[in-house]
Length: 326
Image (cartoon, one colour):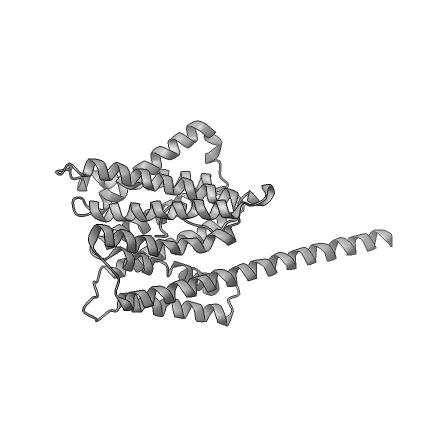
């Protein structure tokens, strides 16, 4: 699902300076989402024994340990940021998104919940267009409408297959979308490692405080295997995605995030015998198609903005040169 700390794939990294290795990036980011799918599946399994808050804490603990190791290796400069308040708020939104999602999958099949979370890009478009003043063309608005139609097809409120908990996934997607808006604020100043570190520390701190009120001791032996495996998969997923963004162009690897629906369906079938019905698959297809179209329109808009900035810079340089000649 797209609610993991490093699952944002919209920010180009330093690969542009070294020359991108897109095939390696695609492989790495695919492995990252395979790990995230396994993390979600094990989280669903653990919700049969523990409160969702405790399951989220278990998952974040693995990432927190990984961040501590990273800080020991790279040094405290990783935590340097020009936007500490934004980083903390992003961590809060990440925690809310993850908690809402795990609360949902306690009752809803993985594939259904994962598909609904992919309305997040459409929510981002709505926020950008209505509140941030970003230009959004009619075609992107139509893609947003199509995405929400796909969500309704997956959810099917009023039908026999509907579970009210699916609405919590909408809250998870909304929190994730708001988190991604903050990621845009941070992208020009803070690296992904810095953002993941702040997210992990903030999330672990937030979850540890109320943990004493909901903690349940393990009563079955398999928990001692599944819980560490979930934490490890979560940490590995973050590492793979961070590395993918380091070596490849973000615009190339971004569409691979939709493979999460495939992995969620696979894990759901293998572990819980859940298979999406025809209407769920139709809704997923509409969401994915609309999301990919939105990604493409954003890529085109970003390229036009970059070309416009270059043209303006060239014009200003030419005018400055003529002024000097005069």
